[in-house]
Image (cartoon, rainbow, N blue to C red; front, side, top):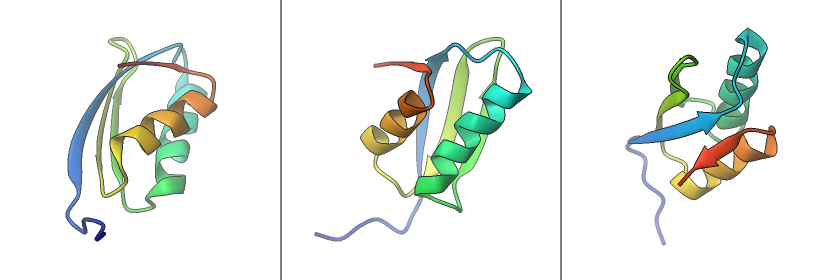
Length: 72
C-alpha cells in the first residue's frame, strides 16, 4: 500500500479552542504527524483546515488527544 505524497485538504469542527495556546496545541498535534502540513484555524468558528499527507482519522485522533472534541 502506497501513501500519498500529495497533500489532501481536510476540514474539522473542533470544540474547546479558547486561546492562542489551543491553536498552537492543535497545530503541533497535526504537525507531529506531518511536519509539512498546513494548518489554518478559525478559533471563533471552531473550524480547522488542514492540508496533509496523513490520513484524516489520524489527524482527528491527534487533535482529540490534545483534549479537544472533534466532530465527525
